[in-house]
Length: 273
Image 1 (tube, rainbow, N blue to C red):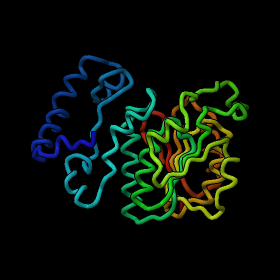
Image 2: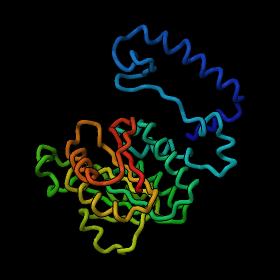
Image 3: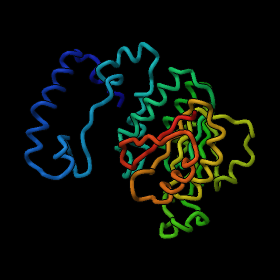
Image 4: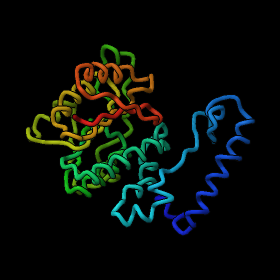
């Protein structure tokens, strides 16, 4: 699913259809519910969901995007199939990664890519694709067995050992081997044998708990190139309190400021100054 089914539809017709939907269909549907997201003028298929626009570069202007060498709109079906029920339909998250990948290419940023918290590999698919495009390496850190009991302490003591329904082998089958290095084990110990001079242009932290997030920020932030992207999942979702605490503490004395992303679980992003 790369939205290529719509490539032959005239751009003017697509714009007209979008305008009709926004002007008439959504307000008409909004009359039938007083609960979010209808009252905000958004069209919903299920409570807690909404239908959003595809960014123009991947839809109305897709031919121009492809002529310019774009390719990061091609992985939507893999993202949806590779994820879990909680996030596989989070297309705001998907397009955020696509736009970040495009921006990295536009600015010719160099460096490797990393993800801590791979789970089933849905976002790792996108990171591996970027690594292949750049000729760099995507380092994928995870226990591949769920939370480590050592991290279920303090603010996270009430959390249970979850995300166990995955394996390194299953993620390999989804993400592939090219330009990818799988790093299995408890972080940060799992990074001890990596080269000390690694530098990253994109890091994605999605490990939910205070201890591994704090360790990840301490490890990756100094290794992030100037202008590099640091993407932190679960910051503003109000469920993983340890994630918010670790991120707030770390950036309290840093020059960067957090930029919230309106995806399902409240991602925050910074660019290294």
